[in-house]
Image (cartoon, rainbow, N blue to C red; front, side, top):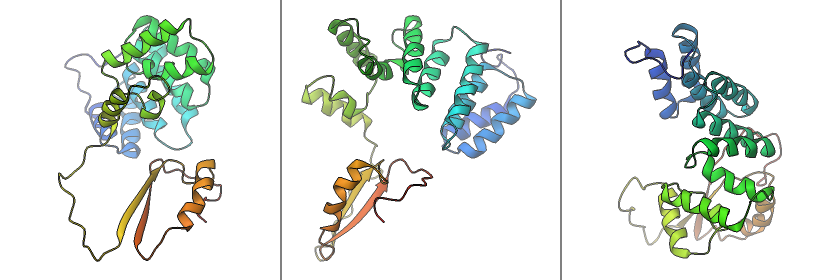
Length: 238
């Protein structure tokens, strides 16, 4: 059991699984990575990537945490695996344990790209800052390391509009075409709404009246769910 496969080791299943994962094909990636573990051997990196694959599937964060713990057991001092475990714990709602784990990761690598953005919010949540200077140093480390925090989270840390704009531009998806198709003057104006909360969420209940008041004779509306899930609760749009 090693952190990664030795140089020259033949591991086509592992290589294919990582490629599938990076292309967003998580269902096939999981199957191939499990085959790699069975036939090509267990490594910390294999379990680390399998945890990432499983975490992308709805309702399986507990399994992802267990897989990440397995990766860490094979490489206990690896700051990437420690920070990744902190991230999984946060996703699972174990914020206190996540904070402790991320602190450990930063004690090994003070510029950890996984730990830095996450720990800022958790330290605030639990009032775990040593001082205002510590928070400022953490923010500077995030900026200097080239990390791009969540734009809404960044609003709570600084009030420099230019920094916020630059960060938002880096986080925004790149357009697939340089120029939009010209709008037909006689056609309805199209409006799109993007959100990860198109379900029983307070923001959607507040927004419901606005949607109903739209003039559908002049406008055409689309909603784009940024975080589709299998939800049992009633939709806010029914």
